Structures are given as structure tokens and as C-alpha cells.
Image 1 (cartoon, one colour):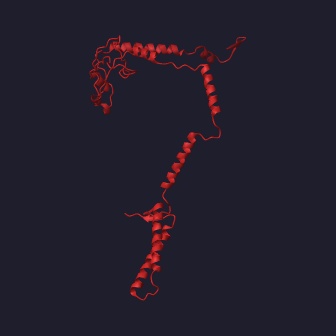
Image 2 (cartoon, rainbow, N blue to C red):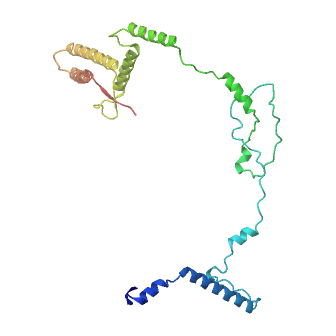
Image 3 (tube, helix red, strand yellow):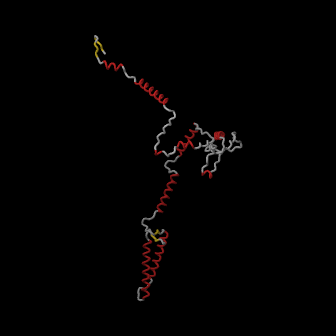
Length: 275
């Protein structure tokens, strides 16, 4: 509040409120102490043998048994001893040492397993070999050959040998392996063409081989010449019935032979397959 010559200017009530600010922390502490004091007085005056109130439980889960209670009532499992099959999977790693000297480490006594065996374990036999891995590694280190890089002299010799092979190569000549491949391709193509069915072949027929076709054609030609000779040797007059009948038979056979000659003179002859 500003005072000039005994007169005051401003808002006195607001100034008082600002001067008297409320300490919330102190009042909270004071309130907590009062509550604690009342609780102590109530516990001192009231009876101490009052029963505790039961916790609220839903009707839905009233008959459900607690899992924690079941686990606590169960007997604890027996502790598993030290497994006798330690490193069993790596017992046969590395070559078998065939030496008269035995390993320095003594064989440990066999331990009994308490783990139940599987049903398939009856048909499988487990062979446990006690190996001295330090000795095995030592033998492998001695027998292993270290591959060294070639020296400069060997590299020069290889370079000279490659140049000699390049100079001795005959230019313009087909290599042997290519000629062999070309011959193989040619044979395969011939076999494919021979095995390919003829599109003009009717179903149920086969192609008559060329030698058989030529042989049949030669027989037909010889029969034709014989029939012509017989026909020319007959008399010109056909007064009798026997002469007319014989001439008709010869004409019919000659026409059949000419039809066969016409068929077997073709480049391809198809013969029906007898079933």
C-alpha cells in the first residue's frame, strides 16, 4: 500500500491476503498427525478381540480350488543328479585312437540315470566311448599337412608351360571332344528319325521293310512273265469250252499280278498287322 502524506492508496484486503499465503504442505502434515492420533485413541478404547472381516469373494468362483494351494500341497520333485550322459553326442567325434597305450585319465565309474528312458530306446543301443580328446587332437595335428603357397619359381614354370601349350595348339582344327559330340548328336538324330512314327501310316498297319518289298516285287514280275508266256502259247481259236475257261483264268491271274506290281512298286508299302 502506498502512503503519501499520511494517506494510503491501493487495496488493503488484497495486500493482506498476499502476505498471508497458505502453506499446504504444513497443513497436510498436520492433518495426517491428527488422523494418526485419532486412530491410536480408537484402538486404545475399542476391544482387541474383534474378529477380522472376511474378504469378499464372488459366487462364481466359490467352488474353484486355488492352483497355488495345489502346488504347495504337492511333493517337491527329487533333485536330478549329475547327468552321466554329459557330452554323449560328441563322444564319437574324431578318429578312433588305435594305440596300445591307454589314456592317462582313468575311466570314470558309470553313473546310473534317473531319467526314464523313451519307448524307442529299447531298440537303439548307445555306445559310449571314453576318448582322450587332447591325445586325438595331437595326433591329428601331426598327421595334417599344411598346404603352402607355390614359390615364385613354380609360378614361372607354370606360366612357361601354359605358353607352350598355347603355341602347340593347332588353329583351325576341330578338337577331338567336339568331333565326338557331333558324331553323338548325328546318331541321336538318326535314331530319333527312325523311331518317329510315319504320319501317313494308317492305324493297325506297319511299314514293309525295303528288302522284303523288293523281293516280293521281283516274284510278281517273274509270275507276270510266266503268265504272259502261257497266254501267248494258247491257240487263237476258242471253239471249245476248256480253252475259253483256261484263257479266263490266265487273264484273271494276270490282272491280280499287275495290281500287286503296281502296289509294291511304291516307295512305301503298308501291311496290316495280324492280331
